[in-house]
Length: 432
Ligand SMILES: Cc1cc2nc3c(=O)[nH]c(=O)nc-3n(C[C@H](O)[C@H](O)[C@H](O)COP(=O)(O)OP(=O)(O)OC[C@H]3O[C@@H](n4cnc5c(N)ncnc54)[C@H](O)[C@@H]3O)c2cc1C
Image 1 (cartoon, rainbow, N blue to C red):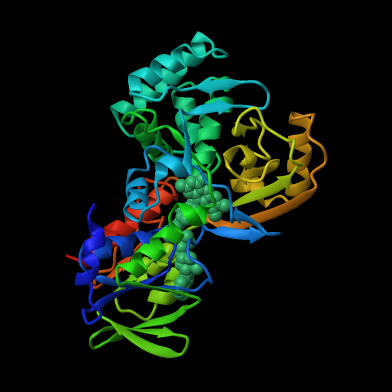
Image 2: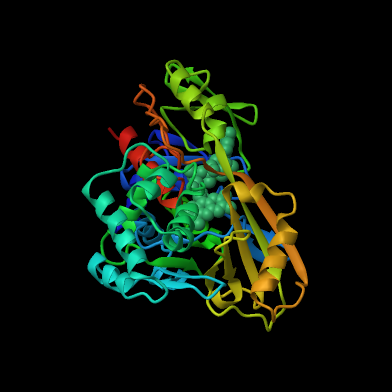
């Protein structure tokens, strides 16, 4: 999408605009793609800031995130979107070959490069027996041959005779990180797709990208500024209360005033969609399918251990969970001593999460003092629960209406890349 800065002149205010409801990563990506197609986007965002579930928040004067995020090299569309709006991934991330280093000393290192280079790295990885290596290769060969049945990850691991070490240090951490769903519930098909795209994907696809800034600066803020420069609008603090049919398209009720648009993209989180599209003909089945989605939580405990506190590596895993991962934000350009500890899926629902996390971190790193400050953020609907048998949610029959959001790609979990891809697809659908 190089050269898009020149499109601004074409997006004159008299041209019909598309309304995009929601300025998460899906809605903003949709708006950027609309500009690329010469359509003027007007984005309505209920919250006071853009970014949705991947946004910056300010806590005690610190620019933090509503939850620690990581990206991977395989997020091709997200990285391209960032470049389009002037956010350079080369400076905004620490890019590392996939390395799973655990607080109990266990370490698995892949190598940045082709799947063959990764396979060699894996086969020579210390800490694994030949039985572990062969079992892992058996699983990778099986998913390369054919997608697994519509079963759980636990069933797939049993069928391919995985060892306890592989499950503990490889498949469980990767599954919880990618699908935010425990092995017993998670969809083997979606997990296999993630493994195909990363461990068996193109060179660099499994690299881990650790943000060196708050989430707002990665894409949402630059995207909003870029869209405004292009003649689009991003209207924060404006909740769309209802969408109803209108002779010229759709009437949007925004703060009691009606605004009419020829085309609309609903890019809210899935649980907000049924109420918004409920008055539109032919959307009952879609609304029912979205209503049937279940959700998983994510809790992030931000703990300030003081300036001298450092981890041996910027990202480390806890094989026994709670937390599942710890990130040294000081090593990633943030305040020295600040750690972000992530608890995913079912474990995030515990009442004693904050205390359990601090205790586990101090047990793992004995030199850390009691933290000076702790702030805990839980998103109760962080992602949909990625289980087998999930029905693909289809787009509405009316070609002037589109959905965008991280829940729309049947073979993928809820991620930033799913959100961005769905936003691009929605813009293309409206463009015909
Ligand atoms: C704590 C946490 C950790 C995560 N970790 C990762 C990770 O490491 N890697 C990864 O890839 N993904 C991760 N995810 C998932 C990722 O954040 C989401 O998949 C992605 O942000 C979803 O984007 P979206 O645009 O589809 O939806 P949302 O971000 O939910 O955006 C929807 C927007 O619509 C707005 N809205 C709702 N109703 C209205 C209305 N009526 N009018 C106007 N606006 C409205 C909302 O305010 C919101 O801004 C994580 C999520 C959470 C919560």
